[in-house]
Length: 385
Image 1: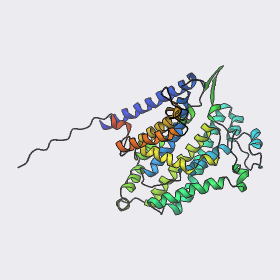
Image 2: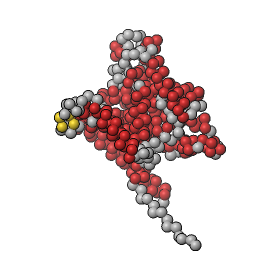
Image 3: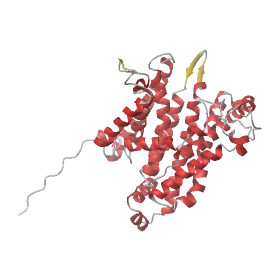
Image 4: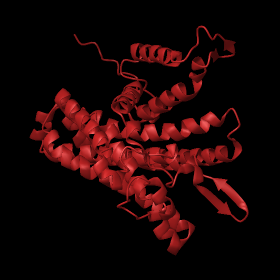
């Protein structure tokens, strides 16, 4: 009976994902850049990126209990890797105008020459996977000495690593690879992703980041529900007991750290697609704090909560409260009260209210399916003499 319910839940989840994808594609065609609802597409694009970043951080911080603050560094590695390997050869000299580009390989160009449009898609997909792999390899090297630390010391070490990576990528000696402190551009981005069917052209600018985030989060869900995920939770709850049960602490910590970093690299690549540029200054430590805030708002130990927290954060900061900076909000004109920067003040107050009333975040440690399950009534204990 339980197995039947599990299958039904899986099929229902798959159906909801497919309906969501169809809705995103439809919105991409209906909403124009001049429409007021165009910000909805922006929220979906950026929200998908941050949702993946938050879920990958939650895998490490919430499910394994390792407090890391190096997420922005891994996202930076992913963004640069994707950008470098998707810049077309015709634009590479223009992008690297102050340096002689050392890498002149473009995956979309290589595969499109042999496979056409499918080759372009394959090239972009390989660049995204390579972005995650580069972040994972770097995480493995960093994790060898760093994962011996615990709690605040681990957080400080990973935060320092992220800042070092950002400085190194802007180093002029690495200019032929990273373009120094200059931004990378002209690579494959979401605004150029279209599907041509005859004379009809279907825009996929919002669907692509949503697709990448959905598939990646699905893989993370499978990991969390596997034996590895149970080992991560055991380490989080009690390391001594976990080791006594035969769990290799060093191996599983490294596995969680590398897996989290891989998906952070994928999130960084997706962010480069959405923003159409890759620059080290965009990946400051403040980005890690924002992602951590999304995890805390949604609930540490809840994947659904991380997604909800990310979407709410992006929607509030990018759309709902933006009018406060321009002197107009909810149809009220008050330039003397609503001024530049006031949006952040109101947003901070909203966050404080949420934290006060939801001590464990919006979802706590629950997932969306838990909200629809009937709670069992507590059994009435018989009075004993």
